[in-house]
Image 1: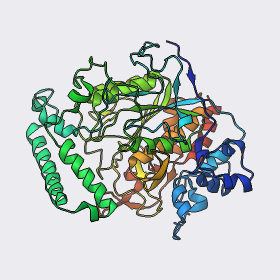
Image 2 (image 1 turned 120 degrees about the vertical axis):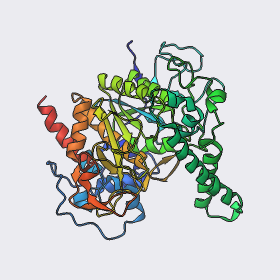
Image 3 (image 1 turned 30 degrees about the vertical axis):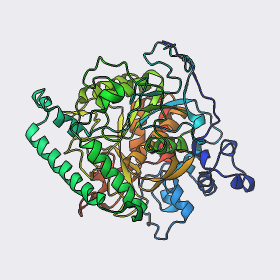
Image 4 (image 1 turned 90 degrees about the horizontal axis):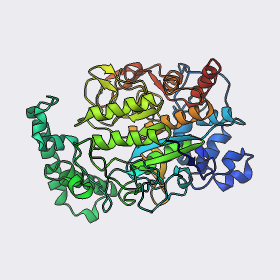
Length: 510
């Protein structure tokens, strides 16, 4: 079915970070001059300092790590810096933009499968995809795609009346449905139950200690940790909490039961910031992008049916890149998600997945969703991303990041990342969730300016063009030092400038 899509926005990219002040004192190209505040200072600084060559350089053996402390503004823009000029392992975004100067790109649709996204944020609202074939608010599925009033995206965490926020962890759901152990023999129920009881007991004991405190006198960080413990105790490890029955009404274990959800892609602004932060990172890097918000990830573990449907929704509505900043250690219906991954591969769609924040080797421990089944890669359209810090030394790898020589493809900036937050706010968050949209943003750049390249081309370019790390790093969760090349398949860190140079060269040969 032919569909038309509309983007009522000016080119944004990193231009959302520019200030009026810098536009007055510096002669900046027009795409940056269209910027809005207040992340604005960031791109101004990185644009002013740009100085690039026209050849990709991945070797960093001559780089001396910058010892001096960064300024407050430099801390905000470190992910965009140039390792060769700044001695900071950013992605050299300003070099990439300099290379693209005076070039024309095409519009690319990017799907963001995440928590609620504040599409009313002043730096995001003009990025949002519009489904011209759907009439908003008429309660009719005008384009007959199975989703009523999906003019701006879709929310799989709700029904016509309610929206869901919390969900149990997958391990809790599996234990609650202990008969699952009898199906397919995927998990050993006794060992699973033992792990669940250990985790839930630890959380319960911690939560009990915190409830005895006077929370009005504790630091803000402690309050947030208490709120996290409270959510774990009341929802994540609660065997009797079943939000699907109340807030959605479907059977999450019945693939045919797909008539659910609603158009509320924002969710709860006061409780959900992850999706907005992730989307801001992607929008700050990419250009000519339109974003489909797909609310799928609750506070807790996502449901496999929602994820599989969300991937298919993004693909069917024209996305060429999909960001997936989520994951879990247990999966109830991994096959549904893997079939969706293969569906995306057939449609030439690149999926970017966060590696996870459990300090574990995902070659040895499960991490879902996965493009790997029984040791065999089921598709070649997924990039799994680990997280790095701004320190180009043994502390390069973020201490929380997962890793894996086979199942993590590349690393990207993920520690202390500045981006958009709900209600027109901005702030720092960290995680492999922040590293993935950096890769997604570069993928959008490549597909915009070199649309003849396939998803497989783009994946290889991103992996092959990253900067090399010629030293040993601390393995997350240990005191062990290993060569960086043992922590991911490419042995490299994302570099936007090199990726575009390589894309330009490869496109000439197609």
